[in-house]
Length: 117
Image (tube, rainbow, N blue to C red):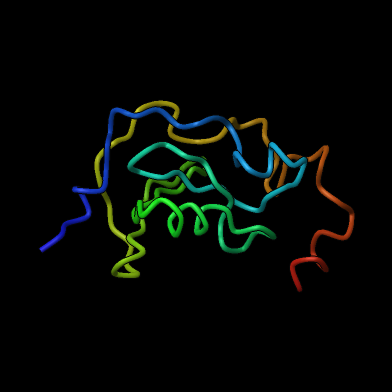
């Protein structure tokens, strides 16, 4: 039986302070998620592009952790369940100065309507 910890590498650092793909394309995100296996930072399912889920699908890495300040929960996409796990390599959250959603300088004024809110 597979356990969540088989998909967690606590020593790998995050790929950066924001969603890799959104940063590359100049897009924005709502919340950030960190791949617990390789450190890839992607945007959440509430974001326009859902890059964290796309990373799971493309890489086969099935466990993510929130990359939001004050949140340390993990999510396993194979079981669709959350759990608490080990502390990952620092930093464990995006910078406090980064807006949510964000980054502020790329956030369109109509971001809520783009997300159907």
